Length: 316
Length: 129
Image (tube, rainbow over all chains, first blue to last red; front, side, top):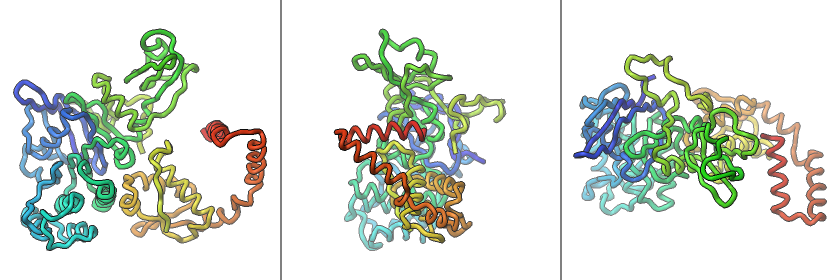
């Protein structure tokens, strides 16, 4: 199956600073993917390159096999920027008309259905709508294009709790019905947990974590035990330690176990939020990409990709 | 039809919560033979749950023989599920009575709500790893 996104050595430099550097990952089609990272990590630059708003300095980026250097790629995706730019003096109907005129594959029935589900009048002017209603129109515009890939930059950030709940439900339901691949950047880690089945974590312009939620989480363990001396206990050091801290006599660490962990340690499965926070706090932790997210080196075939090791096969 | 409730703080995987809620609805007679389960898109709209998670739960229920997919229509409660629910009403089970006795003894012994809850959680973790 073609990947919705394939980035290979992708980079963007502004002056001397690399906003995104050496990014290589894949996103299989049909996934709902959370794009997570601290502010300034390169999330918006990545989304910008996928939508041709930002030109890559290095590497390649393909959407469903088409390089973003080709204008034809624009038909494949919809992008919803954080500020959801709409013409405030247009009515809802005029906004949808604009969508129809600008997009060859426009689905007017779908766009109208999304608008009407929010009890919005087609004659209302955008400028008179609430934040939640405006987001609904923006979603109608984005889905009306019938994109294969929907890219969202902080879609729920400025919404009140009720509107956020409604929009998140709308997003999930329409993605299910249209089979759209979704990438959404977000800081709402607890919401991502039930919305996303795929994750890409960026920090410092690089990919730290990418793959199926079902495979990434079980690859990690939270271990707790008695602290013996300063620093990481030797019996844990042979595992990949993402982060650790001590509280009194208690030592706690987020690890990627390589083989068995000794009897003296209590293991528990971390939540998505715990794993994400661990990586965000430790930007130089060794990255983890599951096989479906990994990009084969040039000249290397699919079968030669290195396995994930423990935790592999947990993906459904 | 049923409505699912996803507890994001329970620590239990969301798909297992759905499996459990369907099993419970069957036992309580809320779901009966031939009833349709909500579509993944419907669950997504109501609970913000990733549609693949709902489908995973339905596959698990299908594997247990409790539901049957009808391609292009939806997922329905199977006859086997209805019979199973009838054959094993939990409320009249002797286990329920034994648990009642146990709770009474725990209370007499001076155990508080938190003690009882901790014991149950520990015992459950031991027997249902």
